[in-house]
Length: 329
Image 1 (cartoon, rainbow, N blue to C red):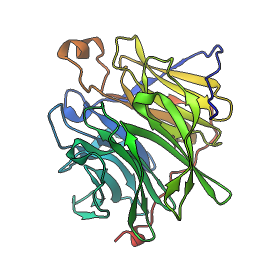
Image 2 (image 1 turned 90 degrees about the vertical axis):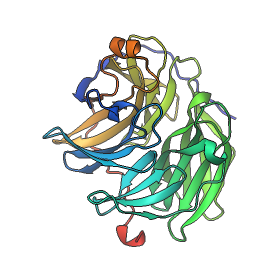
Image 3 (image 1 turned 45 degrees about the vertical axis):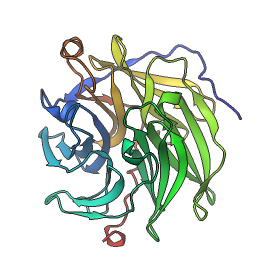
Image 4 (image 1 turned 60 degrees about the vertical axis):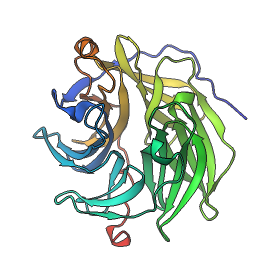
């Protein structure tokens, strides 16, 4: 098993700027999953509205007007991806996939319930691709390897369990190589990025290959996106410790080289990145969280729960794949 230990070199960090804040509302408890929806508008999920809440929301933020629309949900959404109709989202919520109409809140169940971990696990991060949805779950206590990794196949709506030994399944990148699909996956407590080769027809993964070993870093890798050339990934680091700032890092998938760092001021718990085209430039947007912060810690990190933005050097980036709404009704 080959491991890419990130190479040590001088990387001059860039500082991100605050884009938007939910203020004192519970929307900032655990924001994740920003996805481009329309020009100047991206969606995101607030997984839960407070420490004891079992409900969250689907949101759309207009960066022109800085107006945020919120659809409160009956459970905790791990992710939401717009379909070819931008009013409809495929959402992983609690223990199944649903198709949700944003303007009305009406929903349609798309999958059976996930099988691992009983009521101690819920769906967490995921990724849509032409064959369906790859998504993971998390142990609600973030302690035991009882959560699963799953594939929902679009053509027959079959749910496949790919793994049953994850703790907190997070960032995912999926790329096609010839007739083969590759999946890069993060199980946050392991502090590693692993790659699988994925057999679509059999619903099976190869043995995992560690491509990035991040165990020497203090924070936990959380959300992850691919760079436009597919050669690197940008990872948000969730750091529950006392640090001066949050971090987002870029690494080569080929060499393991640490290529870039973005500093997130006043918000150490960075949850998820987004690359999107905005005004003919590519911006990096990240979400941050106030999860499990005491009132005293919130005062020390006043920007926690906010969204941050930075310009990048990328020329353009592809829009994420969208499942056809006609295949989902």
